[in-house]
Every structure is written in structure tokens, then in C-alpha cells.
Image (cartoon, rainbow over all chains, first blue to last red):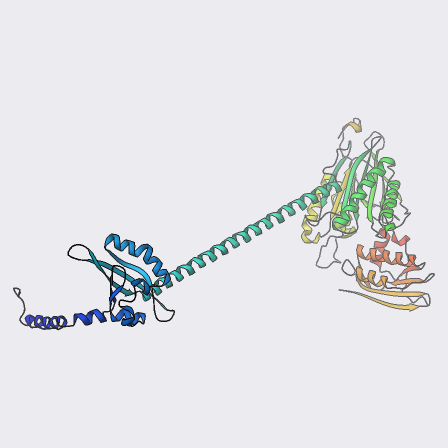
Length: 450
Length: 109
């Protein structure tokens, strides 16, 4: 047994090992059977227990005398174990002659149960006939506990996954709802903006008409894009070569002011078709507003200038008659460079009294003359840090005087630039309307020329 | 800036002393005060504006409301001691012809 090159002393170790093996061989086979770390039992082919080791008896809390020759293997099993034994274990054993590692449950003392792994082999006689069944039983408590724990963990993981999935679905639904709400809000906002735009368009003309022999220009500013303007103006023909115009400012802001503006504009247009005389048109408006609002206990009013343009001779001159209801006086920029207000004293706010006096002022626009109408958004624009620092009538007069003579577009352009310079100071609606007779005109019929 | 309204009764009717700002923010104060103001027929409501520092279109509307309130009770209304700038606005909108305007703010008696 010695190998070449083996160190001295190695043979001594081998001798010690052999002695240990000898001691093991002298161990009692009977004791090994009885106290092995697994259960042993042998049964007859009908299952009657012929022999059983102490280990298994101890596990099951049974007494040998009550078991051997008295109980069958299946008597040791739980109901579920019996069932599984009948349906799987026994048929497999008969068919294969052996089965290995089948999980069953055995009854222990009291109501306890012991999970076990069972292996069996059939021992045959010399003639090949089946004699008995040898069975080993291994305690599988730990493995079962491990499996249960594994199962519990898997269930927990599954539950957590399900909860996470539910949370994800909830979050998705909430997100979808938020998006839908956002879309709805955007749609509503869009619709409101469209409605406001449509309503705003009904308050002022989308563009000025072309008036023969006259240059007309307009500027219209609403203090906020979302806010409907309280200022209004219009320019329209009333027959006989005459044109009517008006410009004004209603009290208040927002939708209620807009409905007043709308009523005012269409009342003035209808009144002018009936009688275009400025004082008559304002009197009609006054009666309508007073009846509609003040008589109903909700007084509302506006300021307005109403005017009528009529050709004065064939040299391009235009006669202008204007009446004012509580509105700042119009301004005239003459061709010779002079500038002045066109006073309309005594004109009362439109709509506060059942009968209101309106006085008419008259002037003639020569070629190169321009008439300017404005709302107080211009004269009350703030030019300084305090609310008392207003642009004012005098500054407007001086501004216009510096630019006279000037055509309608030139006046509006200059004032537009001025207003833009006010920046945040322009915090009210502002409307400007300029009507001028062009300075240089061909000597043809004025009514056929733009 | 604010609006102060003081109220005293005289033999001819109540006198309201309106001082401060009669603007969009404060004009409703005057209107509320008017709602609780008892006026009798043939009385005269005097609105003393000597302390008025600012008046915009909301203030004008409130003064018109005072006029309406007085007339509804069969009473008269007088604006007293109207500051120059407010007087100019009243003239511009024709209200100097509608209101009785008295130059001084002295007690009517």
C-alpha cells in the first residue's frame, strides 16, 4: 500500500484511522437501526407493521407494543397522507418496486402532524415473490417550514407586486384625469376667448369703411386682452352723401359693460338711420338707456360724441356737426397749424335722466384739417408715479399743436406712439378716431374719390 | 388712502362730510352709507365735499346714487364745497347742471 517517496510517519496515521474504522464496525447494527437519525419500518405486503425503530416511535409518540402487528403503515398517516398514499404512493410502489422521497404527513401525539419524506422498497424472496416493504422516514419539518416560508415570501412578493401594479394603475388613472381636466380647462379657456373675441368684434367695427373725400384712422386699445372694452366707436353712411360717426365710453368694466356697449352701439346706429341729427341720436340713446337701466333700478350710463359729416360745397370741404353727452371735447387740427378743442358744453352723461339736453357744435373741415375724437383713457393715462400725474387735456392740446397740420393717419400714428410710451400708465381702455380732409386733392367730384 | 364719511343732522336735513378718495375701491362705502340714511320729504341732503381728494367715474356714480336716493324720498340734494378738479369733471359730463352746487361747505343752519 506504501507509495514511492512517501514520508516516514504517514503509515502511523493510517494505522490510527484503521483503528477508528474497526471501532465503528464493532458498533451494534441493532443500535444503528434503532437510533438512526431517520425512521425505519418494515411492513407486510398488506401494510401491517412488522418492525419499527425507536426513532420513529419517539417522533410519533407511540409505544412499540401498540404498533407492531396491530397497526398498518397508513394508520400512522394523517387523512391527507392516507389519501395520497392510496392514490399515488402504493400504486407507484407496486409498479416500480420502490419509491423515493415522497412527501407525506404523519400523525404525532395529540393533534400534531409531522411532515416527512418517505422512501420504500419491496423486498423479494428467492422465488421473486414480494415478501415485505422496507421503508425509511425522514423528518421534513425544516424543509416544510422552509417551503412555507418560501411560499409566504412569494405570496408577499406577489402581493407587493399587485399593490405596486394597482398603485401604478391608480396613478395612471389620476394622470389621465388630470390631463382630461387640463384639456377641458384649455378647451373652456379657448371657447371663452373665442366668445370674448366674437363679442368684442360686435362692439367695434372690424375695419373702417372708405369714406369718399375723407381720411379716417382709428386706434383701439383694451386694457387687458381678456377684458372686454368699455370704449366704442363707429363710422357709417346715413344716405345723401352723409356719414355718421360716434365714439364713447361706458361706465364699468367687463361683460356687463360690454352688454351696455353693445346696446349703445346698435341703438345709435338705428337712431341715426331714423334721424342722423347728432342731438336727436343722443336723445334717443339717452331714452333707451334710461328706460333699460335706470328705470329698472340699475342705473348705467355712457359718455358719447356723435357726429354727422356732410359735404360743404364742391371744393372738398366737409361740414361737421357734433353733439356730446358728457364726453371730453373733440380736437381740431387745422391746415394752418392751429389747434383747438371743439366745445360741446352742457352735454349730460347719457342715460342718467329721463330727459337730457344735448347741444350741437358745428365746424367745417377744410382740406388739411383733421378732427380727433378720443376717450379719457388718453387724457387720464398716468405719466408719473401718482394717480394725479395724468396726461391731461392741456398736454394733449400741446401735443396736437406741435404736430398740426397732420392727416388722420399721422395723428393716430403719433398718438399711438405716445400711448405706447406710457407703458403701464395706460391702464384704461382707449379709443381714438381721427377724421380728416386730405390736404392735396385732385379737382374732381369729391364723392367719387376715396 | 381711504374714504371717511361723517354724518350729522341739522334742522334742514342730514349733512354727509365725504373726505378722502371717492374711487372704484371706496365709492361703494358711500353707497352703503346711503342705504342706511333716513331722509324725509322736503329735507335737504347736503354732501360736503370739502375734504374730497380724488373722484373718478365710480365716485360720480356714487354721487348720482345719492341724488337718486334723495329724490326717491322726496328730498333734495346739494353738493357743497366741491373741489375745483371735481367741479371740472362734473361740468364736463354735464352734472353741474343736474346737481345744485353750493360754493361753500358751511353749515346750512
